[in-house]
Image (cartoon, rainbow, N blue to C red; front, top):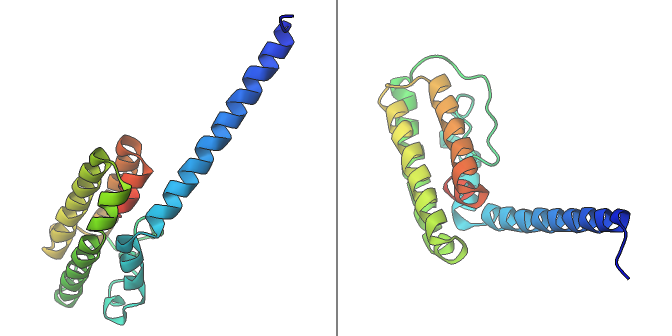
Length: 163
């Protein structure tokens, strides 16, 4: 006996709900794995580094998934702040390198390319901040725009892996 039209609709709706719920579960699992990756954990530890506190109120040193866009000064970094930014860049590079093997195991080749590209783009604007070519406000806006664009184009795992 063939199901009537209402049963077919109900079955389709239930199937769609179950598929959606399963995809959210997979997304949450991917996100949890990315947030536990060595790069993100290492970068998260930078928030407790007292040497970085000089500019922590201007740039959130936390990895992007945890960073909050706060009101930033519309000025370039001072000489003292530039030294701290240079240290932060060095530490971020170390953290990203620390997660290379993890990204190799957990991301697809395309996601790895996207993560590398995003990290490179974030590094480029960080260097511009260091050089006084961007204000803190511009830097923070560009940084979050890069993350959101990467998340949209490459997916959350690639974007989070590059923080």
